[in-house]
Each structure stands twice: as C-alpha cells, then as structure tokens.
Length: 148
Image (cartoon, rainbow, N blue to C red; front, side, top):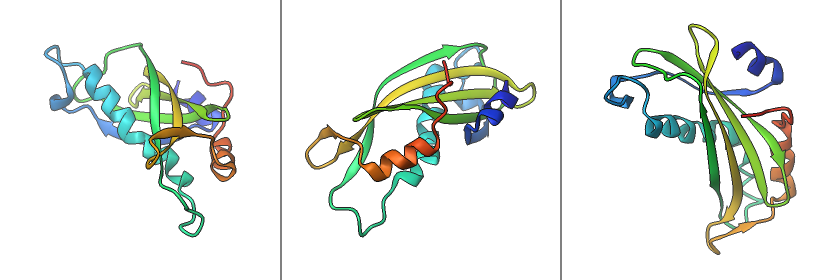
C-alpha cells in the first residue's frame, strides 16, 4: 500500500496519468511503457549522486544490469499513478533499487520492480567501484526491508 511506501521513506519519483498512447490494444499500460516510466523516474532518485564539479575527474554514469517486474494489476488509461523508489542494498560495485507503482485512487500497488545497477566509467566503458561519496549518498536512501 502507498502508506507503507511513505512510512518506509521511499522517495516519490514519478506521478502521472496513464495516457491512451501508453496502452496496449486492451487499454492497459503496456510493459514497454511501464519500463519507460521507471526508467524516466530513476534520475529523480539518483540526481543527488552527482558530485561537485571540482571533484569530478572522470565521466561516470550508470547502467541497469537486470530488472524484475511483478505485475499485480494492469493499470488502465486514465488511472493516476505514483512511483516510489528506494535503495535496497549497496555493494562494492553494484546496488539494488526497488520501485513500487501505485494507483493513487486506491493506494494499491499495481506494479513492483527490482533493479541491479552499477556505476560505469563512460570513457573506459566498464563498471567501477562505487566511490565513497556516492556510496554515502546511496545509503541515505537505503531501505533494506524493500522487496519485490
């Protein structure tokens, strides 16, 4: 339920209506559009990871390695959705994100997702150890009890 996400301290990363253009032939939010909503929302959680420009010595980005989705109810055109996101775990190179998508009219979770992501050196094109400054910022949003 939406109240649980708020109590856990998950961050609201998206609010929007399900537009007909985002729906499949049955009038439900398509899997592709669902992934798009989450993908578009991730920067709203991770924007705080950007370092001070004086600290930046290399170009660092991120890459999602894996996503898992649990579709609980298919959102329909016209539904108003909210996505809440949090960090479940931070390792040396990878971290796990959880996203819970809610129908705002009922507070019901309609889609939940987990992702495994890495920080990525954009010039060397490889995963890197998460810098201490980024680790501290990720840990600020840590909610270890998050599940799919």
